[in-house]
Amino acid sequence: MRKLIAAINMTLDGFCDHTAGIPDDEIHQHYNELLKTGDILLYGRITYQLMESYWPSIVKNPTGNKPIDEFGVLIDDISKIVFSRYS
Image (cartoon, rainbow, N blue to C red; front, side):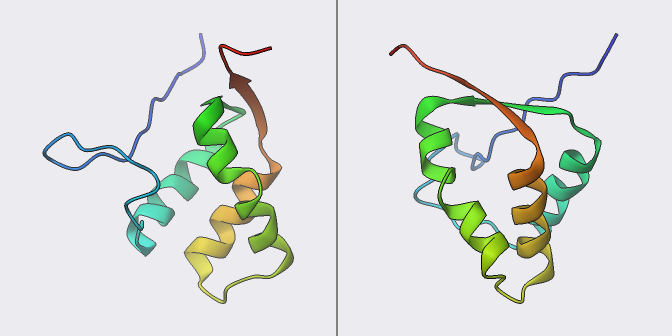
């Protein structure tokens, strides 16, 4: 049986908004290690839409920040499944 890992950025008071927070190098490195062992990412439509154009642009134009640039490559390369209520 394969492992399923659920990951979400959330503050201690339960706040979760990918448009409001800016992850630091430590968070990117943590997710880099998870992505290196993963096969597929499962996304909701809104989160996918927030990320779909950003990370390929980092791959094409690296920032010079190693954890962020590595995250961009890893997340761009991994297969994705997007769930939505809309067809």
